[in-house]
Image 1 (cartoon, rainbow, N blue to C red):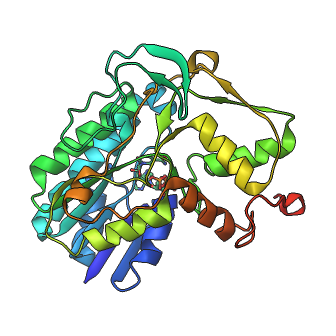
Image 2: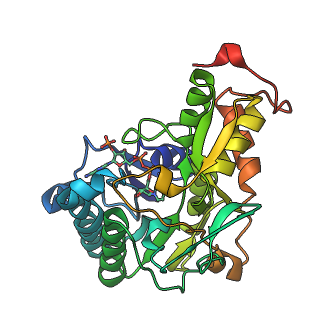
Image 3: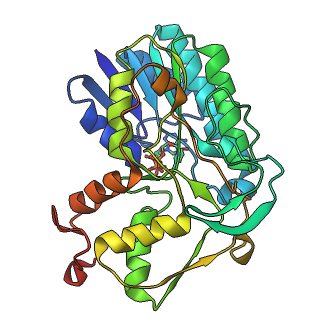
Length: 316
Ligand SMILES: NC(=O)c1ccc[n+]([C@@H]2O[C@H](COP(=O)([O-])OP(=O)(O)OC[C@H]3O[C@@H](n4cnc5c(N)ncnc54)[C@H](OP(=O)(O)O)[C@@H]3O)[C@@H](O)[C@H]2O)c1
């Protein structure tokens, strides 16, 4: 079966192309297809006639979406529409990637008490299931939610996959790497790091997500899925775990979102529950700390079985 992957050189796209080795993969980069342009999507997809389309293409710069609103909606909403229309025309299965940032607007007030996972909002403490009603806080989330709606209405054989806090070997070209690499670099450059402790998420290794998507496409269990590694943490705790596993001692100071203002508002709690997968007996996603360890080994930051060992010489 032919599986066409958009965003094939992105963080998730790269791991997907590897995880799909049993299939006939058609990897498409931004140079090969412009998802915001219906003609481009039609020309390319009708030429290849895939049985499965996986759309990882997206305008992912969350803060820039606030100032580049038209681009956000063109790529994340209309791009999804274009892909959905062509997938339906081909009778193809469509996997479309979405985000935890479709959630967040729950009128949260912050409880200033430290829990294990950091400073947490008082109202929302339970992970979101696929059956919770989305309410995005920022333009990125709104444009992604609009994209989800196009997919649901225009393509009958769809899998919408919401995920969160992605990091992968390839790194995101749009974000110039990923959070793990940024933390490691800054920890080596600075005396201390200051990281927000009142935004809680589930960090997810793209390799794990890619393997789960590869499993899912062979089923006919269409619909909405939340897919993240197990467990959750604040960005501060995530950074602390990265440094602990890498054997770096740079102190990480917890700060609040107010102390690190950004253009886009972000949810204080956007943890996703892999509920649909669990109902199907398919939720074997491993804890985020284990996934992080594998990532650090794969990138050469630590050696197998030797997490916590400093590798200062191998810093770049
Ligand atoms: N990163 C996260 O933490 C996160 C969290 C939740 C959900 N997601 C979603 O997961 C998906 C994959 O994310 P990722 O981290 O793998 O992103 P990524 O590394 O930035 O990859 C996105 C890919 O899409 C391509 N692309 C961007 N605009 C395009 C367009 N208009 N037409 C065709 N291709 C285009 C990019 O190519 P160029 O770079 O060459 O433009 C890049 O190859 C996205 O839909 C994202 O919204 C990401």
